[in-house]
Picture 1 (cartoon, helix red, strand yellow):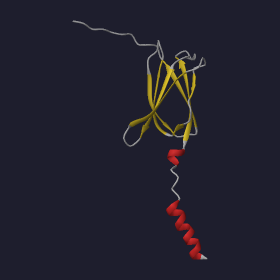
Picture 2: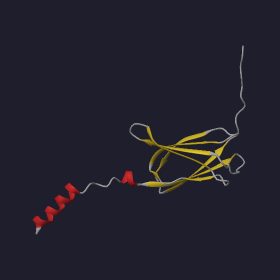
Picture 3: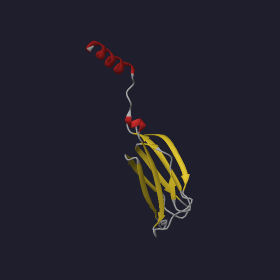
Picture 4: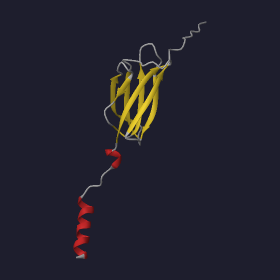
Amino acid sequence: MKTLFLGFVFVALVFVPPVDAAKKATTRLQVIVLDDDGEPVPRASVIVRTVKSKKNKVTDTLQLKTSEQGTAPLPPIRQGSILLQVHARGYQTYGETLELTEAEQIVNVTLLPPQDQVTITR
């Protein structure tokens, strides 16, 4: 009986592939875009790029626009490093590297008005 049990364990270890939890875990990310007065920014472009951690190589890119309420619910994204970029007409571009570790995450982004341009000539 003990030999039969050990045989089953051996077969299970050899022929059943291990489950890679990191590849299976995903995050439902919601990005909320507001201006510096706390008002929603509709139609802002939200770009999410997933990054392969060992090589810092971008593997996937998602892009969508925010709703009238300034929200951008993204489809499930594999957990790990992402590059988040948000831009809208009349605002400074926002960019940040984030680590997705939870099943659901909300990111609040505040877009600022553009800075004054200074030109120096001689």
